[in-house]
Image 1 (tube, rainbow, N blue to C red):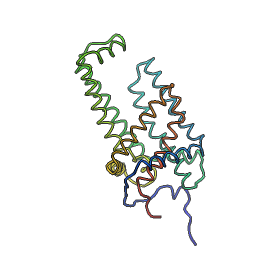
Image 2: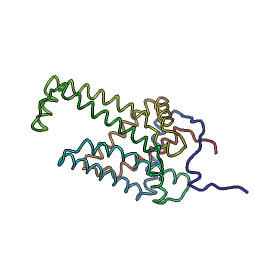
Image 3: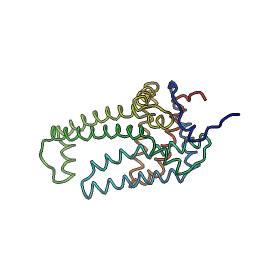
Image 4: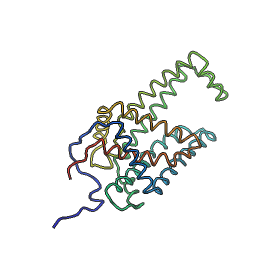
Length: 263
């Protein structure tokens, strides 16, 4: 008599040596097709998570405009972002495994993965580090004078020697922090959902994945950033579709990078 594992029992893969393989552009193309397929198969889940993230972006814009709460609101937005992605990974995982989809199962994956919350805090830590660096660099290059309007600040930033140096150094530091964060989170979140591993192991595995395919991985990161920027332009409405497709695609890309353990 054989014992069949239930979805909850089979959902978390136990500890095995983690094998990372290099990926090619063809793998990204295939993951795109699989991500689109998952979105079409379960559009309500993707649209709900997309709407959740869209509402957060609109809330930040309104907070910046009305109350000047951009910093704390954006930090909170960075914190809830990984949880939205975890829900999309769980939808793709269940579709791939042939498990039944339900909101209970998907939300359970979001709120009962404590290590995912710690990984989210790592993301917030990088965000806060960037904010404080900006707060340090602006007075260092432009002095402590105030700017009556945002247009005055832009003029100082683009039309003065100090402002251009600030832009150059700020963008360089931002790029380094972004690359570091991407390297630590490339496959960390889906790995924490898929296997019983710690946060440090997930980050190390993610860095290994980037090192195995640096050009393709950085290319993927650029695609994600550009798509999210374009999706945010019409008042975040494009995020409704872009976020779920990216989430599903990321899951399938993870499955191509991290070799499945023996069954």
